[in-house]
Length: 291
Image 1 (cartoon, one colour):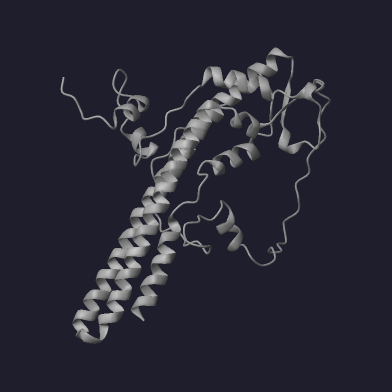
Image 2 (image 1 turned 90 degrees about the vertical axis):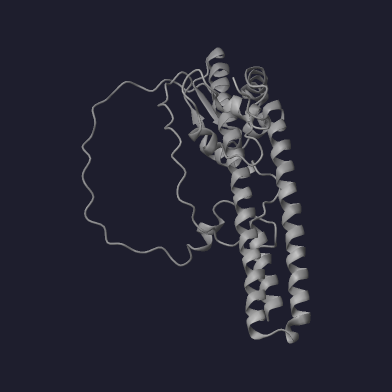
């Protein structure tokens, strides 16, 4: 029946509406990757962000409407079955190495990234803004879902009075609206998530620099993520000092204007002396001025 088909189809479509807490995923990824580093060691420069890839159809979440699947769930869902058993070729022999310089004794510091972010003014302000955008997206998706449900019910009530051609036309009209809603809300969802990642890249970059400076000031040559430590004492904890340095160095971050992807901001970046992403985010809501 067209009513149940359209209703079920749009319930799936509105699944692209995001859940609250948009920048938790980038934070979780950073906490897992930043397990240790050697203060003072030069790191290779980060590669420039790639150009935006061609859009691919996103898989529909299996959960309730308005909930986005957590990162990795899709891969785990499709990775069923036992691992394949391969017959490998003989392993190469690695000759013994001559004795080299001994590694210096480890002087360890502990850092809790989540605790730093809880007191980061930049993180909290950006989270509040992106969280509000996510709530607005969910509200709009629910309104559209209700409107499509009403259309389906009205169509079911008058279906018996319509000709076959009118029925096909009405079905196409409702389906086209559901498809467009899926595209529109999916695009908004993607832009908000990209904004969250853009915010976290700014924070993570400065947080790591702050951690290195704090570690160097205390003669520490190895910083561990507290999430990987079973227990420690406050003597090793660098979290309060790193949070203080981070707030002084980065009291706020650039949040792309609502509806503007940071990838679009990057592609529109002007040569030296012209508007930067920071200026673009500030001026996006203002009309262009002639000089």
